[in-house]
Amino acid sequence: MGENLEIVALCTSGLEGAVCKELKNMGLKISKVTAGHVHFLSQLSDIPKLNLMLRSAERVLIQMAEFEAKTFDELFEGTFSANWQDLIHNRATLLVEKVKVRNSKLSATGAVASVVKKAIYEKIGSKNEPDGTIYPLYVYLKNDVVSLLLDTTGPTALSKRGYRLKASEAPLRETIAAGLIIVSNWDEQTLLVDPFCGSGTICIEAARMALGILNDKRTFAFQSWPIFTDMKVKFHTFDEMREKKKMKKVAIGFDRDPSMVQIARENAMRAEVSNNAEFDCKSFEELQRFDNVHVVTNPPYGVRLKGVDKDLLPKLAMLLDKFVHSRICVLSPREDLEHILKIKASKKLRFQNSGIWTWYYIFESK
Figure (cartoon, rainbow, N blue to C red):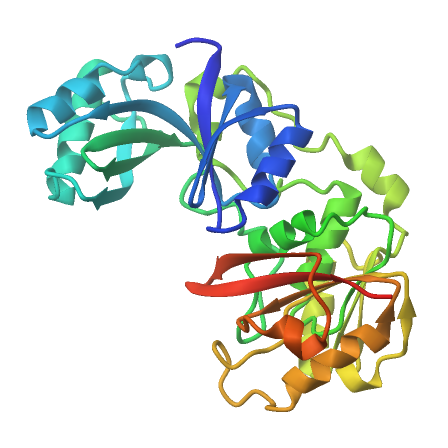
């Protein structure tokens, strides 16, 4: 296998731009973007860094092969032709985590998984003496084109940071919160404010971002692979920078529910950002006026939460009075939020939040 690999970062549909921005900041070249998938060129030695540092991606996969297959023989031959032996040792255990088929002649997912595994085991010369090392596989079949990917992240997605033991009723996934902050072009210097903070995910992700905290409180699939044992991955390269910044307040969240504020504080403590992300119990109406801040917020809405205050939408117009000379970034299922706020968004995009297509508006207040 050559030095450059095609890597695929999986993410929330609609937030591919956040992943692209992160990868470009790492100096990596994007080769293709499809719904929820960002393809780019990288090296095997970058796999640890990608898993540790990407904030808006769900997992990091290595694309091993792509070929047309309308029969099981073609599926076997195409799978066998890839250089699996370069990454997978002969005592490996293959685990097909996902088979997704769309508009293809081969539609029996169980049979597809079985043929793929058989071809790989034969290619690596498996001795049928597994040592417990697991290699997760993703198989995609679309219009008779097969894509085979090796998952370096493992069964637990990158969104599972480990700090959120409790959450609000309809929380934002950590990777989505990070992605929304990234596409909002926050400069990591301006105070970030979330007036509907819930369990604090947006503020905590902002603080982690500003401090350069890595996703290092967990393990990844690649760590047990023999090919990586000599790389000696260092998981604490940012400790010195974190020490210098640890007293700086970068985000503040408000919520009217005292139990949510307590949960947010506990989550911030587990995330090691309790000095950087503060939380206060205040309703939106009680908030003081803020000048020159960066607002990222996910107000409660009825599509995901029943019984939400019907007066909330009209009250959102107060955002422009509460936050002046500020960038205000708001999630809403409403397509008419610009009309409600009586201001045109400088940017808006649509993404999937827990299966619901949601709008993300970015306003510039005067």
